[in-house]
Image (tube, rainbow, N blue to C red; front, top):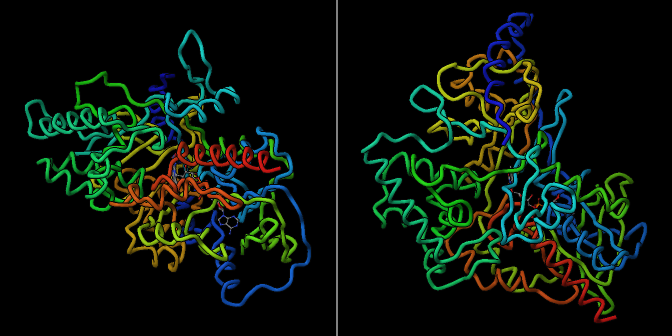
Length: 535
Ligand SMILES: Cc1cc2nc3c(=O)[nH]c(=O)nc-3n(C[C@H](O)[C@H](O)[C@H](O)COP(=O)(O)OP(=O)(O)OC[C@H]3O[C@@H](n4cnc5c(N)ncnc54)[C@H](O)[C@@H]3O)c2cc1C
């Protein structure tokens, strides 16, 4: 990785000078002027209206061989797979104005920043589809029997730091004194993760075995499992809770023990401080987060990608599938006739679209729970001052004990060390009970909470804050609650055959790039082969 530790110190030193020139503290105006961005709830609600009031006749009918619905990572990967398999006549309908779903980006000032997903761990042997595509776009290469990632796109060092006991520490694991009870518990957890790795865990999850031991872990919460194992240390529990909220949108009291262990066992494992090789998983990242990847998946699709098309209904007919959509730009209803459809939308949306949702889909919906998320992009006119004690500014910056997940700095990958305006992005997986407040309360109220979250770390934040843009996800992702991953209904949906099939990260019970991409790629490939065989 590229060592850029010096930059943080330079930024901190230069920032004071820049802030001194600022004529007014812009923070209060920025909070008052905060705006919602990113997800169009009005378009989503069109679906509910269509179900209540029925649909008017379509103004136009269009035909295509295969229709992909939803241009998130799964839909984009599915469209790519269909094309690679020789199905050229496809259309991809997407509700939003741009493709990417939870992996979209934005520009604030001149700085690109993420609206959702912001990193991808370097994929291993279990993810040949993801790795194959990354090789195709030049991010990875196979050399002398090894896969090598292009370092320019890996998170620069320092990657992450934790604010605890009044100082910044390198890495996110709270420090533990030699000989302390905390260190002993870290070691105990490391041993259990190593044992779990022998059971078999993989990313994507479909490459791991599923044994009665996995099912037993999926039957209880991570919290209950930790209690059973006698792992009660406060620092360890905070760290594990943080990891679960970060990846699954819910804490260790909600996710299954299978999910909690999968987080570590499918990756680099877990090491107590001073043990293991001390290496962290290398991750790809860009200022705009995984939008960088989504944009590269979308570009080759050209006009096959049809954004601003809200799909309202999907009906199987004798000859194929009839889809009703609303063209948000032309403000007209349209009909699409296709031989087959891939539903690459969250499963609860798929259930609303289908005339006759299959029993497996209904069954999964009774088990699923969804995490609401808030993402805040804060445009700063100068870098934040940093306490010069402890670890220097990192890409990912987290406060111990905080309700939010901390922030990433979109300027971190810059090679120019001079202090510059930047955008920081705060992530907040909210308790489910706060979904109503997230959807109903005004943006400035949430902007104030965001600033209050960050002020203990950076008292100078309000002086540098130019603008806040907020994105709210009411149902951001499926939480891997106990019983969901082992549900036969979920497996049945992933294996669905026929003219209407599913591809979405939801099919893995939780949401990350590797899961979404592999489901999309697999569903697109299988559907193309089925259509060829049927022709
Ligand atoms: C805040 C946040 C941060 C995240 N961070 C990371 C991260 O750092 N790394 C990571 O790997 N993952 C992260 N994730 C997980 C992320 O969800 C996955 O990486 C991935 O983007 C999921 O892709 P998908 O295609 O399965 O789903 P989605 O992104 O849900 O895609 C579904 C698509 O369907 C569209 N759609 C829905 N309804 C309709 C309709 N009626 N008509 C037409 N289109 C419709 C949606 O607009 C969307 O584009 C994050 C998620 C969130 C919410």
